[in-house]
View (cartoon, helix red, strand yellow):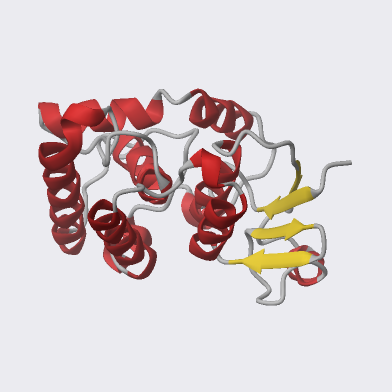
Length: 217
């Protein structure tokens, strides 16, 4: 049994679980995972056994409990500094934290009208007008980071960071709903989508038995 266990929701639907799980996988540490299906009769009671907030993801590391995806990322960066989950350069780190916090608290219209559904494809689905502002802001963030740091690698700050994990579910959403992207943005989205860790998550999502009707169009 590993020192670390992460409790997550359905891999097909739980964007916050994906963020934290991806950060954890990038530390290259052994861990156990427990999937708690969401919106089932016993879901809330089961989650409350492990999470003070009653939400997933939640990370248990020895005697430490960390809930909330961004807090999990901060904890992992402190615990496993060699993983370099934040950029080492202070200016880049401040930038990465800012856009991660913006993703953490923002873009409500995109979340509401384009729920994550990794195993489905809705390319003909009309994107709600109010979601376009969120899409434009997200792609502007990606474009700016790639312009500044693109020479250093394929991700927002060259090497993979927490910021990329925070935006990974958006890449999935753009794929599911057929959002049109220019070459710069598409190349970044492809780099995220083709991560071996993300493909592992995607394969598991495709094989899950659970369906949440509210997230199926």
